[in-house]
Image (cartoon, rainbow, N blue to C red):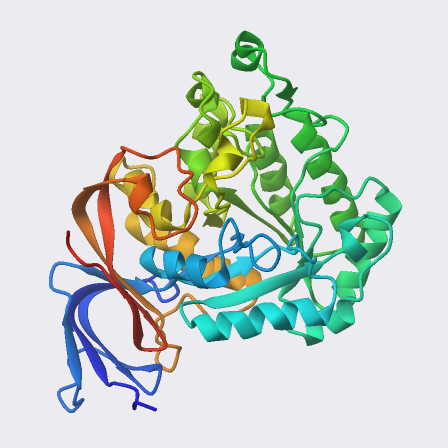
Length: 430
């Protein structure tokens, strides 16, 4: 086995939101850890990465990534999608429980861990199932799932219609200190829909999903969380009213957090006007008012994390009529560049963006990632804030090329990604 290299990342703009650090410094890595910040003249490096003019930050932490393995390897594998994560500067991904088979037993969680360790491109964390088989009828064996390493519990994209079962499941999760990750969507109000209910869906003749499908589910979960003091994380919020409800709950001191998908901060219902199946997502793209409110919520800390909601698909999955296509975007490699677009537009400052993409998602997961503290794991992203490039779906590292951002010109590109001080990605110029 080759010894771990001692690396000096020299002269970069080091930004660590966990320490409110933003300064031009050297970063020294040894034995898989960060061992020094600053000049450190006594540190003898085996390798030097010249980061002059570049940004050095913690490896990104993505709260919602479908790796497609086990069960849907025609769409992607742990190896292919963690390679895509590395190309996007992401060193930690969190996998929802709706794999095939479902993560409702320790064996499935352990299988994913073993294959992630074999790939060795990113840390792969799992959410266990909130109910057995995600069927919403029986509470899962959360004690066993927590022991197997699951960092939270969720019912994935499937809803729990019975409010009593949801309450008991949330209470049971709390006894093990597990955060409950909820994708709020009322199954009856959203049934059969594939687009935001509004003028555009009516014009296109597409069945709509009203905002109420999300806000009703948010309201129900907030009432239960407040009554029992349960820690809840809402994932993939899409509506302005949902954000307002979360803000009100946070103001009352409830332990509530939330994230949004990056594509919801850039696209609106108007982007489906030509039946672009790459814009078929759940929750659906909503109005410009909703998008702008989500942006403000990210800037104000109401929404403390931005995720990719990465869902790679094989080409055939997007070739049917709009509503018959499979929803989802391949988003790992555009997560940071699209975030930097928000910085260039003045929506977020750079430190706030990196906080939403690293330190705060790690805090939600209760994991020691997303920081450049001395002694922390040497998970590092080095990127060029000003490098321009054009998104080419065919050249994505991910096995899924289903991106609505094909042809977009973006400013900001990952050049190096390190995991425990080992390079797992370096950009090769064409």
